[in-house]
Image (cartoon, rainbow, N blue to C red; front, side):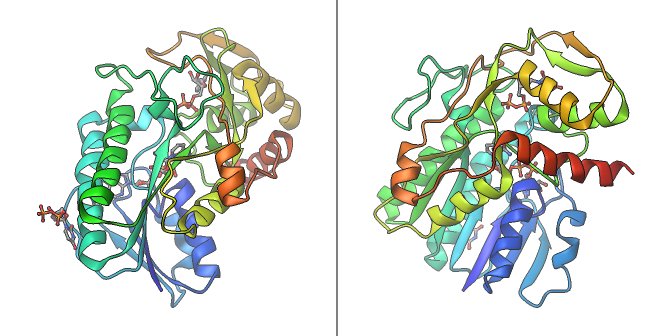
Length: 310
Ligand code: NAD
Ligand code: UDP
Ligand code: UDP
């Protein structure tokens, strides 16, 4: 079995590569190192079952594979807004290339979609049947609409070419190997707390997110790939425990024992007010639910950043 992981040197992708190499399959990690780094997969480098290719998936890629996990795409608002046209290209041209590859070699292909397809939702919690409320012309649109178009492409390659597809909608995931300054809230707050800097809450801190620990998310992605061919998704993957951003900041201050203060900054445009996955479908189809609570997951993530900053 040969498996391709695009975005494999990123946060989620590197944990996925770990699990796949552990399971004994051959892994080809494809990454252009925009937000990922070789450091995330350095420990796999000498492994006979692991191969790393520097490649931008917006360009064609020819190789042989049985399965493809398509994770390539910057995920943090700061990073995906840095070069928004490239972000859309990665989701759209990149997906077309990976789907073309899957079609040629008859591989099963999984798309890492996102809760962002629901935009700033009017339905709470979000079920897979909700179509979302997304601004098509805002600063988050390159990511949200890119991911929505990628879902369309996956389902059209399935309908038009009979391709074996899987789509997972991942909600906010955190853990070790998040980029030190990638701008997402968990890494930002932890790094600020450990450095004794102010914790920057955008808006009043009453907006909510539901945070899932990386091990739980990766387990669900692996289970989704193995489901029977008739089940395509989309399926929500996330931890339904919902917190306000202020609660998150307070938890991080408590666990780190930091003396940092909380400060408030303007809320970015189109920042969703609330987000919580309905995971009934994942529970039923993947026999999966998250195991790691916020307290435990933050503890592990804080340990990682402590070592990194030391
Ligand atoms: P990340 O930024 O750490 O990883 C993305 C990886 O893709 C990086 O290694 C980056 O270098 C690579 N990449 C970006 N553009 C590329 C291109 N054109 N060609 C090849 N490689 C490219 O982010 P992550 O959190 O690991 O996210 C992985 C995937 O999961 C993304 O598709 C993201 O949209 C999705 N996702 C993540 C979350 C989350 O909370 N972490 C939530 C929803 C969806
Ligand atoms: N492609 C690729 N690797 C392959 C096969 C295809 O990167 O092994 C790319 C190729 O560049 C093509 C895209 O995937 O533009 C879509 O392929 P498909 O066969 O669906 O469409 P077509 O080749 O007709 O454009
Ligand atoms: N956020 C914050 N301070 C930060 C970074 C983010 O208050 O330093 C807020 C952000 O405005 C959003 C939430 O935290 O409301 C989650 O942001 P993140 O970028 O992690 O993910 P997303 O908005 O894509 O869910």
